[in-house]
Amino acid sequence: LAHTLDFIHYVLGEYEDFNAHTQIQYPSKVVYDKDSGEEKQATSDVPDLYLSMERSSLQMTGEKGELRITASKTAFLNIAGSGILIEHLDFASNEVKTIDWEFDAHIAELAERARNISKLYDLFAEGKLKEAGAADFAAAVVRHREIDSILWT
Image 1 (tube, helix red, strand yellow):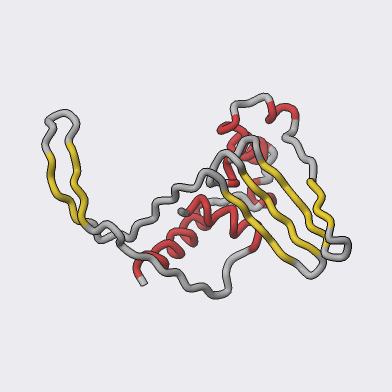
Image 2 (cartoon, rainbow, N blue to C red; image 1 turned 180 degrees about the horizontal axis):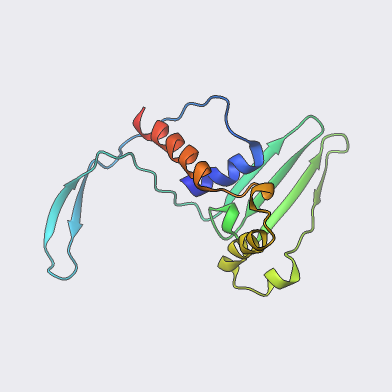
């Protein structure tokens, strides 16, 4: 949840105010021990947060148009290595245009899951993590407080 919220806040900024609703859909589960074959009942007091999306989309609407970013291979836009589609809808012309983009060459040659962390290493080496808005320990504390407010209020 925190990693998903991170990229949303990176794009949109922190919320001024928000309301979130969670629920426990499965308060009781049977847990299997694969080695012994034993079954036991487990009770949860934590809201269900399982996301089973195969893709995700972030859509931002402004006065002159709309921007939609879609990751076709994952629910997490911030770690999608490829399959990211960026589209712009111009309200005046009612025309949708695809925005072409690509990774820097030295990042494109890496495995997909390594690409986003590679960029962080580059920023770290250049001393530009803060300037780029990369999350740090203080940001993690903010995000954990946000999650606490979602789960426990």
